[in-house]
Length: 122
Image (cartoon, rainbow, N blue to C red):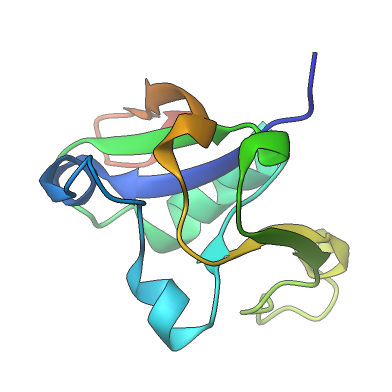
């Protein structure tokens, strides 16, 4: 079983993307890469930190990094937690340095939320 990486995206954004072209994100322009995580518990934290107020469905793209055509680098967080002692500041995150070829996406999950909008599973 390969080690997959995870990318979070609002469903309306992903479904509006032209599926005949590689997937891209705003962060590819602003940060130079597509943000991903490796561990589901880290993705859950990211979802609740950055996506809780996003309305509608939120998707988790499960990506096989061996199939990604762009370079994948494992690096410290691009946006460290404000608490310097946060364990997330010591994690290496997978960053995709280019557009994502969709054949590398092996599964699409719908993130589950509680009634207050917080995420409970990714």
